[in-house]
Amino acid sequence: EILKNSDFIVIAMDDNKVVGFINAVSDKILSAYIPLLEVLHEYQERGIGTELVKRMKILLKDLYMVDVLCDEELQKFYSKFRFKLIHR
Image (cartoon, rainbow, N blue to C red; front, side, top):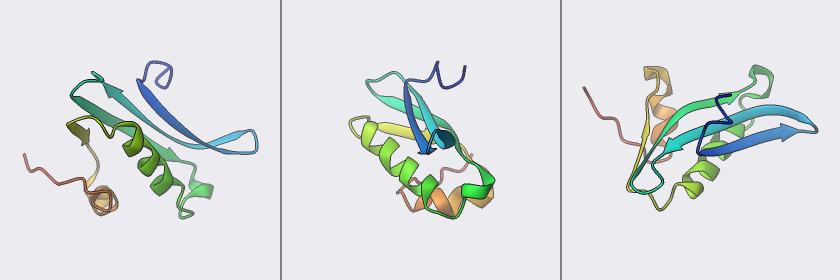
């Protein structure tokens, strides 16, 4: 249901198995929010998450602002894609 109601989705497949995905919700004019990036544990550390973020950024390239809220340990990962840390 989450993916069905998302505005943008990128899915990683291995044969007929979904092994990862990223989604975004957006007004499609100004901004988007990426709530989920998920890769099955046994498929992590293979660059799948990196590729999913790269492809999502292409889909969202015309938007002024793309937000991600993540745990502290993931901030370094997202900084590779030029996401900036904003303190509360």
